[in-house]
Image (cartoon, rainbow over all chains, first blue to last red; front, side, top):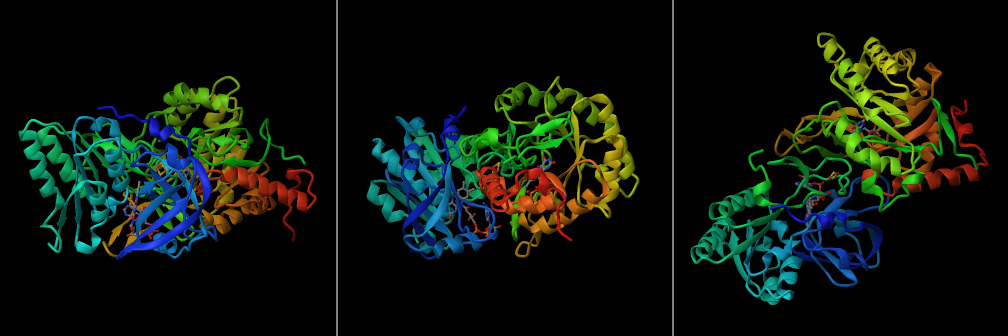
Length: 274
Length: 305
Ligand SMILES: Cc1cc2nc3c(=O)[nH]c(=O)nc-3n(C[C@H](O)[C@H](O)[C@H](O)COP(=O)(O)OP(=O)(O)OC[C@H]3O[C@@H](n4cnc5c(N)ncnc54)[C@H](O)[C@@H]3O)c2cc1C
Ligand SMILES: Cc1cc2nc3c(=O)[nH]c(=O)nc-3n(C[C@H](O)[C@H](O)[C@H](O)COP(=O)(O)O)c2cc1C
Ligand code: FES
């Protein structure tokens, strides 16, 4: 499958965006809404922005990549987990302040391939952030059979369950400690469900985002039954625009760049063993 | 105001260039910059044959800087000439092609491929590469070995006509001896610094963060050391010195020029702020206006005692 790579050629902007709101979403996750016209019209789910969290001094220096959680014509929202210095600073920003946004970046999910197929959206941990917009778009485009599989270590790390249900998606949950839904890995749930689908002869398509082991398991399950899967990868990034070659991922055709060839790749293209 | 500076036989419109490996081919920056206003684009280093590069992670942030271990990933010199030269020529900007190799022979062959009649405007020799010919000596990199540096520059000099810039590593005991060796070999300029070797360790996992274990430190963290290296080299050689290391703003350019730089290259800033080169150039011009400096080149080496 050669995926459409036009997304990466969408005109990118560098802009100071005003914060409309920045609130605690749950436990260590925050939701930031930014005023941003232009960008939302061009962006697609799975694309990301590179955020400069401070313009004071040189530490932290690099931008941090965050997936677009959702967008309206005039705003974009980012859902992020506070894991270090950059995301901590971001969480302390107040309404009315501005942050420097670079985007939209990368190649998003290819929704056009979902036509006539059962769609399975699989998300682990903060990998759920960019999947909300994907589900929103899929449902708005008339895919009424979108099933979401959310996985996390425990209940309070399950994101967007109610929000996705509100959109009309069927949501399955798995937690490693069993505090909500199925006890175990979310891929186990997915595996059972896609086996059913393939046994019934229906066509399916998987969209995934989350930790690498989860995506690797997903890729394997999808390969066994011949179901296409698009997965969004994570990498340490610097530029986010394909200039530094820092965000390499090993694929079956050599190294590719997560920021500009991805972050969304065909799951079978990735060399998971590398 | 006159921003022009001259290096070798080439006159550059302004002294604010972009450093190799931090600017892709330039295409990546078209949405953010007028490429015409870049003093010169130094393209990502190419080698004779394609190189796959290092295993990830290849970059990590450090206090006011970053480490990289990209591993000179590139598709080879012939591919660059075939696929990227048309674009580079269309930019109307001065173009410097950076080359590297495993030994003298590879450097010379690579130089021969990239040098065409009247293009590029200069070739930069990235000498921070393993010193295979001297495998048994204490000098791990060519640019740590004065004699090897001189021989290599001389060999490329004999092969191609265009201006030659020798880019030096700061990981040496005495940068002046290497700069002098490059000058003796026939280089038209020396460019410094490349990155300082360093590493990052994750205390939780007890593992090195980079796939390659060690990498090169760049960004504002290295600026004070780079200024010193540029000053030392300036005092040691007669050819122009190109200053590199942690430049983030217009006054950083001024500081490097006062220490003796004829031009500068900005690297890491491009990764943080893709419009950085344009901003830095404007800030530099503002400084010149504010201090009533009519010609940018009048700043070169004018550090006050
Ligand atoms: C395309 C893309 C989209 C992303 N979207 C989201 C999103 O929507 N929501 C969200 O919460 N996060 C997202 N991330 C992850 C996010 O970018 C990192 O969590 C963030 O950069 C951490 O910055 P920090 O300064 O707070 O942490 P740091 O202080 O830099 O690091 C804290 C810890 O996290 C680790 N870490 C940092 N960056 C990464 C990385 N890229 N991959 C793996 N480990 C890392 C470090 O090793 C360290 O242990 C995305 C990443 C990518 C590449
Ligand atoms: C991601 C990255 C890749 C680099 N690749 C190259 C390269 O291919 N060739 C080279 O001569 N220097 C390379 N460098 C070094 C820079 O050109 C520059 O010398 C160094 O980063 C110091 O400048 P700075 O602090 O402004 O970044 C690279 C630097 C970075 C950060
Ligand atoms: S982050 Fe620089 S190339 Fe991807």
